[in-house]
Structures are given as C-alpha cells and as structure tokens.
Image (cartoon, rainbow, N blue to C red; front, side, top):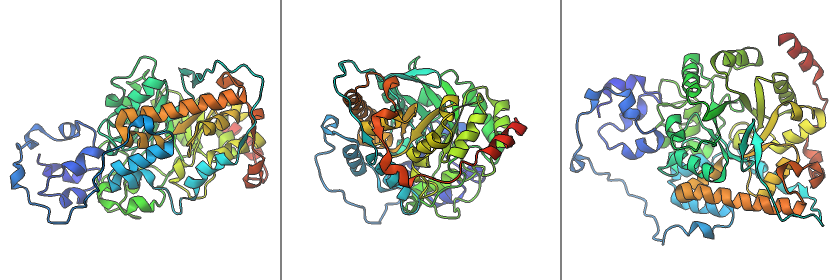
Length: 463
C-alpha cells in the first residue's frame, strides 16, 4: 500500500508513518486499526502489490527472548480476577500491558477503587430460603441477566484478535450489557454484527473539538439502533491524565485507529506519546451544561447517560436534566484522569447523604476497581443499578480471548450469587443498605455544605 497521499490526513499525524517508512508495519498497524480501514481511506490505486518478505531489511536490534513455558493454564483453573490478570500480563506485549495497566500519577485513585470495597462490611442474614437466586435486572429499561456490564475499554485488539467483538460474544453468553468505546479497535458495525436480539449495547461518545466529527458519528450510531440503545457521554477526562507506564511505550501510542478520537497533526504531542495521550487529542475540553445537552438533543433521540460523575453536586445537576439524561455513571475513569479523585463508592455515599432523591430520578451506575462478586453486591446495596468492569474484561480477553472474558463474567456471577445467598437476598431488588456497614468510610467522605441551592436556582432558570 502506498500511503504517501494520506500522510497529511493521518489522524495520528505524519510522524509515525514516516518512522515506519520502508518497513513492515503490520505488527504496529493491525492491533489498533479496525479491519477495513485501509480499504475505506485509501484509493484502490494505492494498492501496489504484494511485498517480498525477503526484500525487507533485517532488524539487527537484539530481540527479547521469552522464557520457555507450557503456555497459559486452563481457564477453568483460574479462580479469581487477579489470577486472570496475572495470566494476561504474561501473554500481552509490554506495550499493550502498559496501556491497560496504566493510571494517572501515583495510581492512588486506581488503588483506592479496589481498596474501598474492603472497608465495606457485609451483614449476612440467617433463616432465609436462598435456594433460588435471580441476578437479572433492568438497566435503562432493558432487561439483562447480570447487573454487571463491560465499561468502555479501548484498543481491545491489543489483547486478542477477536477484540471488542469477542467481548460482545462473551457478554451475550451471560446476558451482560456492553458499552462500546469510541476508541475501539473495531468499528461499531463489526462489534454488533453477530449480536443476539436481546443484547444490550451503549455507545461511548467523546465530544470532539470539530463538532461535525461527533455529529457524523452520532448519525452512524443512530442507524445502529435499536441494537445500540443509548449514548454514554464521557465527561471524566476532558484532558488526559499523566499515565507514566503508558507514556514510556511511545511507539504503540503513536499508532492510532483512524476512527478514534484524535485530531490531525504531529504524533509528537505534549506530555508524552502513550496511547492515552494520543487518543484524547481532539477531545473537546469546553463542554458545559448549557450548550452540550441541547446540542446532543438535536443529533440523537437515544437516551443519554453521563459518565464521570465524581461529586454529589454534579449528580444532582444531572438529575435536573431528566428525562433527557436517563442515567449517570459514577466513575473516576479507572484512576486514569485526576489522581486522588474519589472512588465511585464515595460519590454514591455522598449522593445518599446530600441528595438521595437523585437515585429515584436517574439510574445510577458505578465502575472502577471491581474484583469480586462481593464488590458488586456492595454497590448494588447502596443504590447502584449496575456495576461496570473495564480492565477486567481486557485482562480476560488477553488471557483467553472470548473464553477468557466469559471466565471473568462466570467468576463474578458465581461470587455474586454466593454473596446474595449469604445475605438472604433472592433477587437483585431485595438488596438494600441494611445489608452493608459503611461506617469505616465515614471519615473519608466529603463533609462540607451540600451547596445545592444555587444549582437548583440556576438550573430552573436555564431549563
């Protein structure tokens, strides 16, 4: 393929293409570009023919020798999500691992996302018939068999060739919802192509500086309804965090999917060359309540979910925009944006303390740090409608493709059922705050004034 004429228009900039000039770029290109990208963006005459492998210059750099082993263990021998991550880490390239593992600055929020659940105690009940256990529920009006969903996770084909489509098939097996990343390594059409009629998808939107790009994408997603049932506007990362593990892996970070949220220009961006830095380039940092929601209403009639709520004030504001806003996701972007931002459970407890009416006006989902079925139960007890996993799905994909994601969901499902039975809850609807003790977290929560009066007055004047 000749990409000479395309160089000025490459969303990732010209630098990466020129770096690979005269070389076999397959290994750099394939994992991060949706199949069919070349055919879509290059003219037929750009195809010059087949390359003779023997004509390629040999890489004289020393290659890293991997220790000989017997391959990954059987998936059914992996008993928890940490073991799945360990296997995936051994399978993935260092660059792919760095992107998935990385979080901002000192990784404090990433650690807290998981640790916070250890500070919540369960309150099991006895003498309750728990022979039956139903994990089904509804999310945004759609029935799902699990309250666990896959959060928007970019670049899945870095983990396995089946990519986001493999995650979709695993979700179909367990009746779980999937939020498709705008920075997916496959097109939305490819991801939902083999979906089942009752499968539930949402589409993540990063609003772009060039609004026409976002409007074109919304039109494309509208055509995929009803398979894609809602739009998830991501707000927790208007600018990328400083992800040091990722930034050290500059080569992969500079090779981008043509459909990802990036702007044209040099691939050498401020702050480093990691995938995270690259994918956020072109994302609009000037979104606001007054203009963004009316703009979205003009371009899609799909329900809207706001992702990245981290304070009770913003949760309250979002609830004032119901019914356009159907739900909110409490999230700190997996600890990948503002380090030391609160875990979702803190925000959920803030909402319960200052503005519990939010829970009845919009559906509240949470994500970040989920490692156990007990984590899922605790979030549900406190009012969450669904609980998202991001990295866990990618680790599952890296450990065994679609089957690895299925094993991830299977483990969480069984742990969830066990926890529900021990609490004496036969259905998701029976879980409630009386099943948990959160007193250990009280000293960590925001304890200032509610500050909601001015928001209410401002919102009423704008609606």
